[in-house]
Image (cartoon, rainbow, N blue to C red; front, side):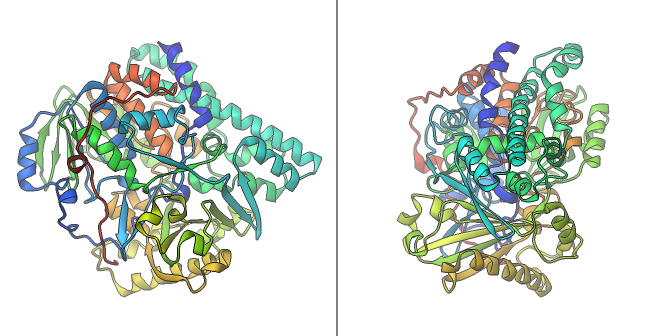
Length: 619
């Protein structure tokens, strides 16, 4: 079995864990333009909202598993468990919109995504592991559109470097941009290290599964070391350290090689090299976008759950994971505190390490749980972000909008630029991300033929907005609005400088801050990627395993267990489902080899799909 798992995840590095959410777009800002009120009472939305009557109905039912959180990891885990085992699964979401960071919102009659800006991992190819999992979990409802060959444009100190698909093309361009012999040799060494580090990720993922089926003594003294020692060796180094070891001394070359650090958070001087390696590998052959927008991910997963007797409920905050005296899960408390007990023997927590452990704080007499809490407090958080959502007059063709993303890095010394910015010694943003979701979605023109949208994402600090956290979302003070406008105006100027054709075509703008993520996504301090992907996060491979050894029936999933982004979320879902069901593990073996067969089961879309086209007013 162990050798089979190693062979299974041998495919992972080549399509490795994602950062499908550039510059924190993943969990950055759901925008303060979402007022804290109930959404419009349309049938498709309200049927997923928790009401008193529905809570009573849910409490009277028997579920095989409860999933906390409806992001990609939570919904995919629920769909895998439901389809593979024919289980009744209950998904509980605290926000009034299902989908987590893959949800969209409507403003001025247009749709904006908040998290999924591009996805790699060969998801556009049916034979890829990532696509196979999505096809199985959604029963082939989710479609993907391959983006252009140039999927990113890095702008370093004003010079543009278009990033083409495939490693060979990138190396060819690097050789043309940096022809010195020393640079060519250092680039070869760098990519060798990329491949070595990415390959070790399969052992890390495999151990998350074998841990659930291996006796503690064997796992601790044999399996764990065998599977993760090489991984932790590579993870212990920062990106900057590896660049130094490879002899990459050219500052501009270093920045071009690491321009996408915003896809995982910490700048190269702080980030773990393994995280960087799997993100680079994930995108090296190009990227794709969901047809119909990012909300189609949730809409495609939900029917798999509800068609088998499960439920997906929004406005359903969980206050406690209930554990009995024998350290076994017996249910969750949901709804207005103290909450209604929903009985179950299996719980999957997909809401991040901090929030998950908080739900267990009442039962904190476990030494392992205390150790996890202590470790979590000692680890840094990932960055928080601001987002600017821009309404544009004109179609993709009218405005000549690219499907590629643009990363602007004004200073090749990213570490110094970031330090100066976060110490407020400079107003120059170290890295800015620009994206046009309307240009990426081939279905957009059918819905919005004469308008387009742009999105800008930059790092920020929660502390800069902390003074406003006690104010009610949607009704914050004019000082808060002025600060948002100041940031927004500066970024809009950058947008027009980068894309001059947009001058005079901007209709409206809205700005989201870390307070939005904290309020709507329950993200600690509004951070985007949970626990930061720094070396110390990985120096103890047992601190947050998917399976909670000290609580029977509890499994964690999401970016804090593996890696950030869409691929990280999907992979963690496969791990979580495999931890709870041996049958799910057997199915995973086939899926990760690129095999997905869908059943002939038909689902009534009117009963299954959740419409996220909600209209919100500015905060």
